[in-house]
Length: 499
Image (cartoon, rainbow, N blue to C red):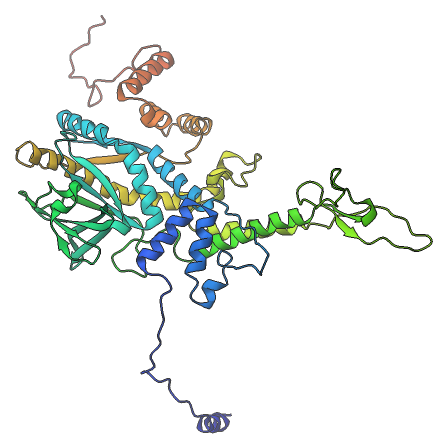
């Protein structure tokens, strides 16, 4: 058979693929337009989505989407938005903020300073809004500034990714640039704030990108370039996922095909509702039996929501009867339910579990089964918390350093830390059962058992008091006898006193 193989190889000529072939791909959306699309998905207004997709349908794929569909003349398409994108982002943000136990600092005095800054800036609400914006847009940055006319504490603000740019050198952050738009006397201006290591610079640009005086806009008239001591930036970027399309920028949870999944889900929901509307009872009424206007005698026009009917001509046959016929088409509810479930799964895959949003959570499931359904949410939450464990301490430390600079003190060295609780943790009954078994088998101490049962919900003093009370109840308040000998007794030992 070897000669046959060699003959086939000689007869088969394979030409290698050319290496100089150029393939041109045009991106349908720029970064700013992509951010606008994600914001519209979060806003959840069906009219805005319809306008956006019709205006950005520049290729065959874009024109084939549900939200870009254009109805025929004198017809309309009922388009319904599910609201799922906003629910996903808001729920993830709420889960993370609710589990944040607190921020720890070295001393009580420093902790008191941060508490005053956090209260002045409403930091928990600001952080929740920042998490939501970052999930929707992809990235953003905290900006720390000083305005003694407003507050004696540093001002913490969050700018979304469409208002921020980053300058890096060999992967190291060098500058964070913030953009703020103003309108003065029917003209548009943009304030460019460059936050670098030890300096802040301001520029005001007009609509043509030309630099103008800061006094042109009243809000920027008092701004001036600032320098301060230290190799640190009064800004902290925030990004959970990296974008594969734009280097150095973040990835939204709506990117990577999720926008198309939301489009498909809205199409299923809209088609379902149209089928229900079209599946209403149809009344075929002879013309002579159609209701008439009591004042003019004209035939009444049907209304799709109350007296819907279809006119049919009267027949002159001998045995004909003028009667009203009622017909109702069959609606395949099960097919729509399955389509809805499949589209919903595509929207939630890799981001959040349906049980987190209260979807398809059967009442017969036990606590362990419910926790298994939360695994996708746990993975996403873990990724968010992993990044927040780095960003929040940076924001706290930067705010304290800004306060030192504002008060004319030497900038201190701060090492804050943040603690997050557990999500979807076992119920108290399950914890009691597990800890009780461990105590029964003698593999867990009483102190550890109390710690496992109450954790961060009790203070150290409360847990110590509980341990003492349990020891007193279980042991009657008598400590176990101790043998104060290091070796067995011998004949040379002096006699012990009986007393």
